[in-house]
Image (cartoon, rainbow, N blue to C red; front, side, top):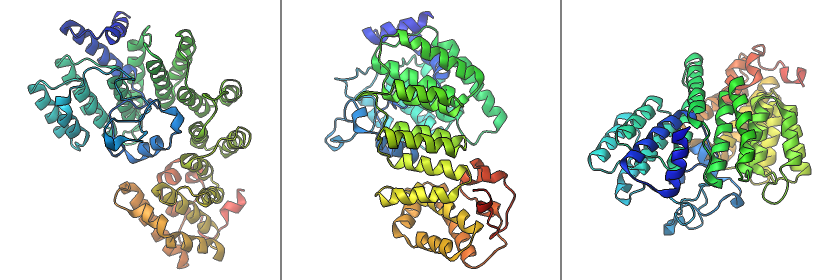
Length: 467
């Protein structure tokens, strides 16, 4: 594919002629569908407060050795490790980033309306400040807000302005697009068409493109795995397999982040034997040993499949035999695997173990998931011991604060409030509550196998019958 080869040369040589700018942007538009993906190496000039809370938590919990440098160069950035891809130009060359456009980038990143974002872009264009970094900031905001149509409009404005993409901007685009194709607010049929369209664009645009650096290689490969994992069709998985095989000839070394995305794809789509082979034969040595991110990602994939036995097996192998130290997201994924599999008592025990080890007392997700698990257990068997655990949870000042403070997502506050009302009803002896009444969080209500169970009455000991 000629324009794919051209971009490789333009990245290396920094040619800024108008003809090359137009060709580069045309490639970027092709790539906007081709690489509509989430890359675990998030490449943007972002502060933690500029990304959604859940993503922020995952990024801040990464092992320090995965970072090539700290994020940011300002004095207040000292010791901050947030973005996997370096933002320091001495480590990772960056083009298309004007300091004069910094105020516009900041305004765009904090924009909360579609019209406002497009107005900022129009203003930047009039002032001659519509550079690659402004385009990337706009795409990042579209992804964070899941503004699919606005994202396409941003790309159109960039095309009109002949704004070229650099590697960082492409990866911001990948993250933005994957956010749009994994949105939960789109009905199944339109979402399926959106995903199918993304895969077609990906196949058409990627062509014979060859990464120009190890950073680009791993970002691209992990991005393709993430996209295909999210789409989940036979065609997507076959394409991921093809590109994974071809990547062996590029001469770059796959890093632990890339392996992590590949493992999650395989685990989620029923290819556990391949996961086991990679874990045993490829993830060895100081740079590729499994870590907490690998553990959490694999266990979360098992949770998505409602497979608590597989989650237990992965935990036993990685924690017990490979001596991986779990972090908070890994514990939460492990608890999620049991809750989604209809084993809330086990999920509660996992969270209690995590809290005893000093993790998660100030985390809203821990608070909400723990209370949801305890509520189902007490609904099944409202014994004094089970009701006492509910009382203790609501009396725990750290958990209450974690679920109700100002920066908590609104959904978490709503769930906590609803669960608290259920607790009051159970403690008041209201036995008319049915199982469906106490499944409150999205995981319990929409994704767990309990949603398909009989609508049991309180006190019917249904969990004991299924153990």
